[in-house]
Image (cartoon, rainbow, N blue to C red):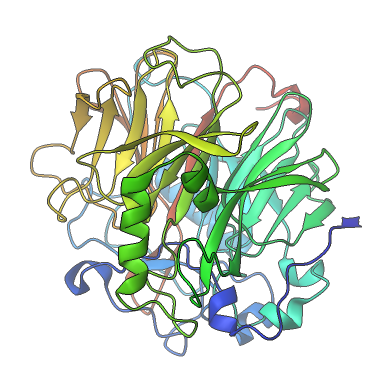
Length: 458
């Protein structure tokens, strides 16, 4: 295994190294208390060492409303399978349905689902009925060269995201800590320990763009105030760093005065070297996508440029890797947004966490030419739809939209009319009565073509 040089700053407070996956705190009535590790074992613990060090996973209090009328046969079978593997220790039959709750054949776009959640350092490929087809796992403590320095980091016990590669390998990210490349058998080929966070994308030639961050001062922004400086970082296929582009300095290069004014205002309102606040994490960049050949709705969207999401600025950014400048930005009616995706028609699909009123989430499709909202979906009538953190939205080839409601461990596929044709609740629980559910970070539909490496499937 190749080990890439580590991002460690022993003199910096550990709290600054522990980059939070979601920097903006939810309202108290939405967040729910953190599970008491002494009250129940963690579902999905991978070893006795994990059980002895509770608290390094991502859980949310489950929604009180039940989904459906009870577990389907497929959901029960899935739960029993996981229990037999030890992934839901301490969770009995749940009071609400888990696994696949709705599946309308003929309306759902076919494929397998790549699934990543807050229950542990692992990812799955599942079929549309929730059955596991393949699993990857790797523990950071088994591969890191400086694990003692990050032992107390709350993000080291789960994968924040994963990206499937054509050969069956995987890019896995530990939030704010590291990224690894695994082969299809979960062997770690290399580990890049330079503050990788949120997302990565592989190029056809094997190079990789990944979001990274470090604690630093940017005097042009604020004198004497360490901040999380986000970068778009390019790696070669072996995980070696080729270049990194500072996104906040890209705002300077691009003359993005209004956004810079917002950053400076945040920092003036109380950021310090001892706390992680919105100010100390002024951008909170949480998504990266390489622009391909799309319908030219805006001249700035040229192939090879990088579409980014700066959640703490409520802004979408377009970074030109050649100049290092942010050449386009848009602040819309969305708030704390995640996962913007440039569609072939040139529009942008995104997950709007606060839905315009800080009580509901929604999925939006906007026109980058003028910022107009061309389509949105805010849930089914009478059904809550909200995630204060994370969340994703992907347009499928048949026109359906696949949505992840991270906070409540739920994923939905909706058709063009907004009707739910597939629904899934993450079957990983903890707490005495299974009242906490592992947050669902990724549920991404993978086409069957290109999965020959899986071999014959029943």
